[in-house]
Image 1 (cartoon, rainbow, N blue to C red):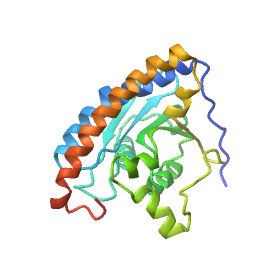
Image 2: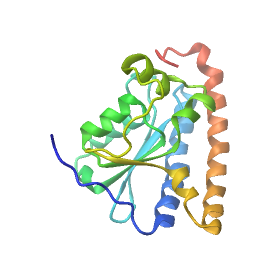
Image 3: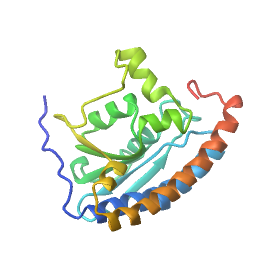
Length: 205
């Protein structure tokens, strides 16, 4: 089995977490707004360079074209279509929502050593009325609680919210204001998506 060096969080957590939240709001949300209007789910993803946190690309769910094109998969698809792309070991993988079992496998097979997410599997089920991320591991793999190893031989992952909770009070308040804004944006996007469910042809709406 291939051996990967674990990705270490940089010392400047504020800079990293701020950049991740800004990327979601400024780069992913506009794409997701268009995608939801076309009947796609609210999930999106982006790739950033570890060196300077610059954006490589952002994508959103495209299940109306192919039920496998989840936000993370669409992001990987676009990444491997780039003519001049950096190595996966040079990149941070950002997912708006905690990756499902399909996307966890894809991130692993693509060779990424990390990913970050904002909304948990429980949020996808309870706040976004999309239960499959938790239901599939239980039904298919017998993992009733949906747990997986968050640090393993391939990658480590982090919840953005959990990392924000570790910050000092002032720093935490500043970032939580951004999170609250994103919560409202995604609540609106979710409402639009849910209203369109009855006419969708996606296998697992």
